[in-house]
Length: 125
Image (tube, rainbow, N blue to C red; front, side, top):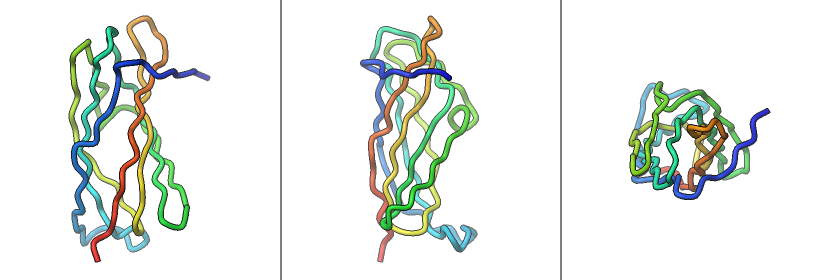
């Protein structure tokens, strides 16, 4: 099993979170929140994003873990000073928080990660 360590200078910003009504969302998770993210490589290493892990926790403390390869179908390669921006969404059942990490590999093959800071998703009343 790979071990991942934080790489100083590799960090994530949550640029925007917004409620997006979605009439086709499933009844057990009827609320859609779009989030806009930037992965910043201010380190001295070249890194490739291999996957992501999200932990979404609702107001009752129930956790949903989402793990997948890549980021929106891509495996961004970030040289020092590069950024990768994208947006995606979570479907939730009510007020929730989300946090996680991007799992990456540097040019020497070491596993590194960038933590996704916790953000709130509050359903409008």
